[in-house]
Every structure is written in structure tokens, then in C-alpha cells.
Image (cartoon, rainbow, N blue to C red; front, side, top):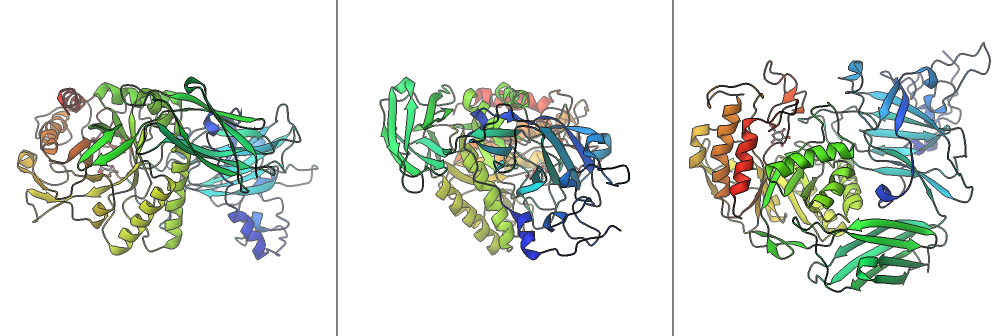
Length: 608
Ligand code: GCB
């Protein structure tokens, strides 16, 4: 064994817990240097590159030694032994999960190291440099030029680090240790009904910024007054205090100047003329730019109001019925996580073809292309936190992780007109600690964004075992703006022929959105309509369920489960499942099942 410097100082451990820096608002439309493409990778089942032989993290040591992969070292002479070499290692594409790129990694859950070398064209010593990740599943430890930038947990939200102090014009390298092992105290937890795709699953970009730059902004239509825009700008940098900032919307001939306070923050309200409001039929986006000195950042923002009145959902004060469908962030046909605009086009075009004006992005924040495209298409969106099934409700650390992930997606998407609902959780078992956990999440969400609606996919129960009368006896129903629940009568329980006798006792005056129902069907497998796994069974279940749900007095929307088949390790039944959850309306080969047309027909004829 190599000599280990055992002065592993406790304070150095803190460096491995460095949180990410304040997120850049709208990095999506900032010009950056992409680090997408081929990255060398090393599979590290035993975490040899992270821990020494005493199981102490290399990056917690003052003298990590040559076993530390983040140093990306090379032998200096022919005698020297360094037992890894990124440049000799194979490559994976970023963005992209590892499971769908290499057969050997299909079932892999663990640590894998990525490395990419890069130069910064037109590097300027007086600029600031940020390294931004769209998402990495699940834990990312990020190092640049042999120094740790920090660590981020959460597989579906963006994060970034400033690296000004570490980068040069040429010969930089970034090393990322990615660990997607599931754990009981994480969010999500050990058990889910989807594939735990690992890797750098979204874009990686270097941003060059001014010394003082616009870190964050918001611009939204006032909840009550549709001729008033409310917003704020937050600067970052040495000259952020008492600085001039402007908001410019050329089409409205609006150009306003404000001065930031001592913290670089300014909050404002801007009266406008009559606005061309964003809606499903008129997805109008205005070009908006925010400027501070030489930093100018442009966005495309739609202005609309969303609210509820009794059991109605109102979009710009008009009742809207949410004709929806659930979507997982998975490209069934290619296999693997979706990440690109092309993937988003495929999913949202399928939804359009079904006749949808609404999508539920289950069960975690999807990549930003989805909400950007939804903004352009006039598609309303439900976004969701990965608080799924069982979570450690009593663990304050778990709560922090849930709140952090929700905060990150609210931060990212707060200027998107399409996003109307923040969902706190999915099918969570009732208890006092869980009620407190979810209520705190809802409170936090509302404190971050009070212009959108809060919901959660709850569960439904029959009043007596096996009975026809269904109730939602969940105290969290009092907290949400939209009452949503999943129900699988006719599939997991109950007789398909009895669906017509179902009654709903919901004595709460809030809009009801059915967040899931469905049945598994193997595309191409035919039988009579009472044969499980046949397309005919799924079709019959849709035919029977849709009218019954539609008869709920407060019904304001439906999102059946789900647009396409998706991989799940829980689904082992051969020949029907073979690793796939088969409740999709479209198969993994892109073929539509019969129920696709049942739902399409229902949406075509719905006169709400
Ligand atoms: C549910 C879950 C969803 C599952 C689905 C199913 O209620 O919310 O994640 O995939 O049922 O197929 O069982």
C-alpha cells in the first residue's frame, strides 16, 4: 500500500460539502461555451478514486496522493505508477445517462468518474467564469484543474459553481464524480417505479460573465391586475449596490431604469398598456431584456394569470379544463433519459395529437427544453418534486433535500408562462410527520412564488373495503389549491365492469384534477376486452373510466398515466412487461395503442 498521509483534517471534510453557488437565472439563453460531447469515463465500483485504503476521502486530505482521480495525474517518469488514466479510458456522451449508452452499464448504480479537457476561447482575465450543469443524477462532486469546486445532490435540477480562480485560457480539465446509488434518506428514496438513470444527463456549459452581472430576475403579471408587471433583479459582484439596471420590452415601448439597494436587489412594479396575454390558443411571448452595465440578458416571457374560483381553474379569468397526459423524462424509442429539444418536440407533439392543453411532468423536474417548448406551444404544465411514495418524513436532512430540489426548479422556471402548478409529492402515505413535511414544502413554494397553484398527487380510498364510494380523506387536501389524486380502479383493484358504479364523495370546493389512472397493455397483444395486458383491456378501461371521472362535480382536468411505456426495474413479468411499465398509450417502438384514440376522442368531444 502506498504511504498515506493520515492527517485527514476534519475541517477539510467541509470542503467536500461545499454547496453550489447561487444559480444563474436563464442560463438557457445566455451565450456559453458548451462542454457537451465526449467525456472520458472510469467506472469505480469500489470508489477507489474517491477513498483511500482507510476509506478516507482523498479530497479531504491536504495531500491526496496519486490515487485521487480528481487530480487527473500522469506518471512523470517511466518508474512512476499511477493506476488510472482518463485519457486512455473510453468515452460517454454528455448529456446522456450511462445506462443506455453502454450495455455493461445498463444496470449499474454506483460511482463513475467523468473527465473533459477544455480551452476557453477569448479568455479574459477580468471576466468571471461559471461552470453550469443542467442536471447530474444523483450526487456530483465537481473538480476543476485538480481543485474541488463543490458537491450537489439531486438528480433533476440545475446547479453551478464559480471557477474564476481556477481556470486559464488553455489546458483546463473538469473531473466529475457521479454517484447514483439510491439511499433511504435521499429524495427520491430507495423505491420508485422508474429507472434510476445515472450520469451527467443534461447540458454542461461554461459561462463568461462580467465582474458584476445579473444573477437572477423575475417578471410576472400581477395576480389581480392584468396591466401590471411585477418583478425584481438581483445583481452579483463588487459593484452590485446602488447600480443602475434596466428592463426593456421593445414591443410595449417599455424601457425602465431602477437602482439596486445595498444588497444588489431591486423590486419593481411596472404599469403597462393592454397586454397580449399568453394562453393555450395564443402563446404570445414578449422579448424582454434586462441590463446592468455591460451585462445584457434576453428572455422570452409570456404574461398570464392563473387562479381558482370554487371548483374552477381560471386562465386569464376564463375557465379552463385541463386536458392532460402524464409524461416521464424518458425517450422510450431511443432508450434512456430525454435531454434535447428534439425529445421535447416528440413528447409535446404526441400530447398535441391527443388533443391536450396540459401535461403533467412526472415525477421530478424535467429538462428545461420541455417548459421552453411548452411556452411556445401554449401547453400548460404541472411540475413535480421527486417526493415519491415513502420518504423519511421525520428526517430534517431529507426535508432539506426536498426543499432544495423544489427551490431549484421554482428558481429555474419562475418566468415560464406554461408552468401553472407546482406539485409537492406523489402518492405519499398519510401520517402527522408527512403532513408537516408537505405543508412546509407548500409554504416554502408559496413564499418563492405566489403566482402559481400548489397541488400533489394524493390517494383515494373507498368508504368500505371493496365499496363503490370513493373519498379523499387526507388533511393535505386542505393545503393544496388543486385537489389531485391517482386512482386505479379496474386495474390494481376493482372490477372493470363495476367502474360505471363508482361514486365520488368529495365535499371540498376546489378544482379536482385526476392525476393518474390507467392499465398496462403490450402493444400488438390482442385479446377480448377482459384479457389483462391486451390493448383491448386498456381501451375498455379508458372507455369506462373517462365518463365516470368527468361526472365528478368539481372535475377540472385529467392526466391519464401515461404517454409512453417507460422502463422500470419493478416490472419483471415476461412476456408482457420485460422491464417496462406498459401503461403507455404509445409503445417503446413508437406505436400507438388503441386507448390512445379513446383518449383523443374523449378530448375532441369534451365541451368544457
Ligand atoms: C402510480 C405511480 C406511478 C406508477 C403507476 C403505476 O400510482 O404514481 O409512478 O408508475 O402508479 O404504473 O403503477
